[in-house]
Length: 80
Image (cartoon, rainbow, N blue to C red; front, side):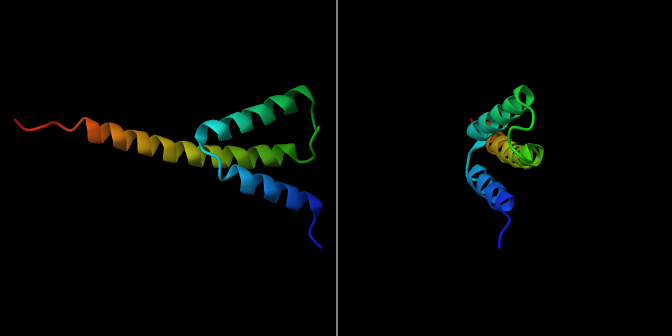
């Protein structure tokens, strides 16, 4: 039988892994602020935040790579 906490965190990470950078950032920031205001209102919220931060950093890296590649492509000099 699965641990209910494991199932909940697995569901949260499954949902969060499909989010793009701005929404993932808002979810992580909102959960962090809620944890600061009301400590331990969700069991294992610290572990969930660490997982979300990992997803956020990976998403940010991908987001920056795509932005840099589009900037590099648009700034290539044209020959006269």
